[in-house]
Image (cartoon, rainbow, N blue to C red; front, top):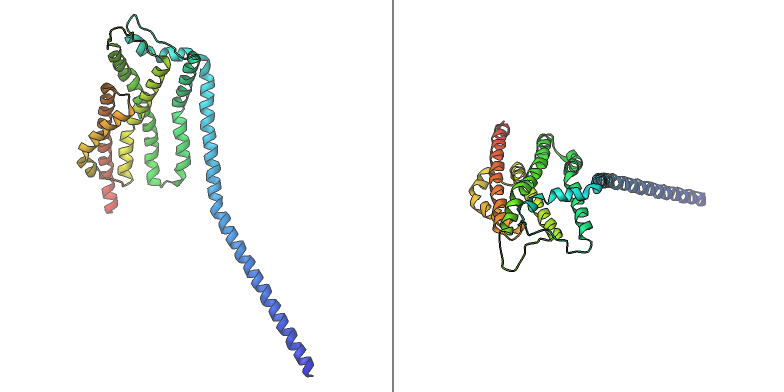
Length: 283
């Protein structure tokens, strides 16, 4: 009888031990499954964002390539129109030179690519907006579309300002410098690089109102603080004009002055929006 009772107790203990082990294993499996599901849930949005970013980048590249292929056959005509402001101010005895072996082909090719890139700016900004829009609040989205449109318009205005005003004045000034024994015959590759640099610099500089407005809206600064720092900002405009333009005083001043005026425009818009949001915050 004692042996039977001991055997029964041993069997019960073994059964309880197996039950505890199976319960522990099931708990570990459940915890592992929960952890893996949590990791998958956290990784899935990241993967989706990366896939969406890749898709939008491919769309941007495709748009640039389509525009480039469509305009490549007209590369010579595009370059002829592009250098019209410079040809108009060259002395009668001067002409443009192609000092590189493949410069007559490579220079129009390069210009056509940059024209396609600049023309695709609205699509590039639209893809950027489509990527960041889901992460914005409703109050932020109401400013996004006007800012997007104004960014495109201001960028093109900066390029037009450089092409129709800055470039003729700059080249007329440079062509008027006479050195005995030296003929002024600019190289087409250097001419293209200079003009592209001016276009980009003025296009970015004309975005100053957008940058000022966004800084005020994001709470990084206030209109009163920017107004107090106006002297430093004016000096900064001239420093940027020195860094972003060729080393001549004309293009530096012609870039710094619009940047200063556009900063004032952005400051005025920031004050208007700040006044509108004050009653809402008080309520």
